[in-house]
Amino acid sequence: MNTKGLDYTVLTIAIIGAINWGLIGFFRIDLVALLFGEMSMLSRIVYSIVGLAGLYLVSLYGRVSNAMTN
Image (tube, rainbow, N blue to C red; front, side, top):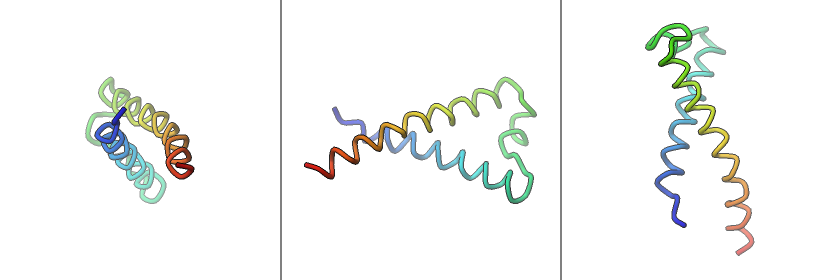
């Protein structure tokens, strides 16, 4: 099964989430809250999507491991 497009999309979402966490850590700027409101429904959806993207990327370990052994 070819999941390359999904992998790139999810990786992009995770990178955006990581940038947001970096902004929070270094500058105390929560870009999601700034754009969509402090814990608004839309903010919670964005945080949930980023979290799901991170969980999906856990499967990447198994696929990379399989690709290296083939």
